[in-house]
Amino acid sequence: MKKFILNISFFILFIPLTGFSQQFPLTTQYVTYPYLINPAMAGYYGYSEFYLNYRREWAKIPQGPQTFRLSGYFPLHENKMWIGTDIYKDHSGAIDRIKASISYSYILKTGDAQNLFFGVWANFFQNTFSLLNLTGVDPSDPLFNNKSIINGTTYNAGFGIVYNLLNFNVGFVMPNAFNDNAVYNYTGKLNFKMQREFLFHVSNLFSLNAYIDMKTMAVFRKTTNEPGNFDISITSIYLKRLWLGLLYRNTGSFNVNAGGYIGRGWSVASSYELGVGGFNKYGGYTYEITLSYRLGMAGNRFFQNKSGPVYYKKRVKRDWNRTSRPRILDYRY
Image (cartoon, rainbow, N blue to C red; front, side, top):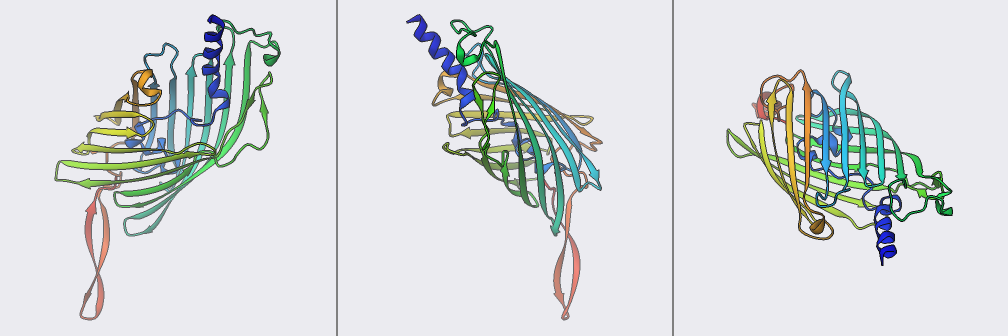
């Protein structure tokens, strides 16, 4: 029985090396920081921004997943071209996953208060599997080729696009655009292979009154050969500076997300996620916190573009001649 339990424990730890259902650590902070879901949205607010993120999943499990993440972007030319980076380390028991990416995005103005965001990026991945602290697992087993630490690396690329009209956004992302046809071997005989992923997201921000805005968002994810899953969320924003929201994930969890702009370019966001179905129900709660810094932030309206309110020229007909009148629309989210 003891040997059976040890083998099952090893199998559970081994799943992230062979499964494809969750190639990347999930996050809920994209509701506030759009770059975290689609790197094409670098420069969405017109500022250089940097994020420091920590996420702890399944708190009831002593060796549950922990993710440390550093992201940021800055302009290359006239706030139209942006370069960014996203680096994280995901630790779960004997398994460590590292991702490092560099992105390039371009903002194309297509009309009055309309924009297209394009982004491309390159990814580097490394998986490390340590046998040193595993009870009942023999590193001399031929499967591991007498290695106590097994490493595997691979590369991929992705792209994204977003259509923006005032406070409405719809986007498509391929975090990994290519299936690995080749096999990337670990030091032993284990294989590391990335799968193609698709992600769609749509959001809108409604102004309820002079003080409160409401943001709704939906996200759908799909990995090759795996079932799709989705998130839906609603977030209340006060004075474009403080926020409180709810998020539901159909894999079996509810999330409460809260945060605010502190001042001098700094903001903080935190979330508490409770599992209500599937493995999440037994793994315990998940919590996440993000500290961000916005370079050159002016004023206290965190959900306002650097250039201020969006204007457009409304064309009207007068005496058979067309003239233009400026009209304020809203703050672009």
